[in-house]
Amino acid sequence: MAATTCRVQRLLTSNILASSYRSLSSRLSNISKNTQALKRCASTFSYVPEKADPSLGETKKINLFQALTDAMDIALDTDPSAVIFGEDVAFGGVFRCTVGLREKHGKDRVFNTPLSEQGIVGFGIGLATAGATAIAEIQFADYIFPAFDQLVNEAAKFRYRSGNLFDCGGLTVRAPCGAVGHGAHYHSQSVESFFAHVPGLKVVIPRGPIQAKGLLLAAIRDPNPVVFFEPKILYRQSVEEVPVKDYILPLSQAEILQKGTDLTLVGWGTQVHVLQEVSKMAQDQLGVSCELIDLRTIMPWDKETVIQSVMKTGRLLVAHEACHTGGFGGEISSTIQENCFLSLEAPVQRVCGWDTPFPHILEPFYLPDKWRCFESVKKVMNY
Image (cartoon, rainbow, N blue to C red):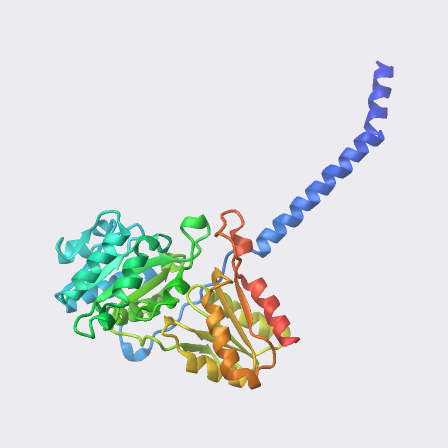
């Protein structure tokens, strides 16, 4: 028994076991570092509610999808030709944006369609051409591509090719877009730049409930076809006191959310909230004063507001979730280079999604989070 005990003791102190222990310790250390990296790069942001214009009167506390419901309810109330249609919208839709509208306005005005995005948009074009207000829903922006031909070759060109004899300006196409934390490559894409390339379409993306209601009502009433993308992570995460009354917010007009003197930050949708945090980090840690602009309308976009801001600050950082190559940030960068060249103190910075399919497990590393944006702030300020 004593001999066996001695052998065990020698084994426990052997080099082999010691080596195994060191290897295990190293692996545990790496796991700890990776966990810290995951936490650092987590795809989260802090949503700070905005206050509505007091002149708009009474408000109610609702989230973004309820604000959209409210806007569509008002559209149906005020326009007898308005109809809402899409996959599953009759029972409220997968995100509940149309809940209660069928019961209130009837099955002839809020109804389901077959599972055919091309058919949904084609039907909407015909309906709008006949004089109705067509509000179509595509269940996810990732699945709008079967309708791409209808939007690009029909809706966008209808007025032009008929010499303004006919148009489908009464068409609005809604679609949830962007990262949500678990959507992977078929439920997370930001596809606005595909449609920004097409003359004849307007492209709008709101950042919160107050904006969503006013911009959607403006899109529905605009005399041009509008593609209205809704950041789905904000459907429930964003809650504000939203005016009860009917109101619209201007399309193609960016909004300066924060005045600054050293650096212009431009974003839209969810990314605006990321940039708000980046702006605070820049002020607190670097003493950098950032001017933050929400583009709101991607096309036609408000060039003048961004140009004037960059002429003042001399620096620009654009951030969006879509891929770097071909993203709308490239259009903004080019425009600024053409118009503000002599005022620029540093090259324009773009912080975007990577040029890969949208990942699932690696989503935190794909997104242009506040850490990546902050590194670009330091880069542009130290140039």
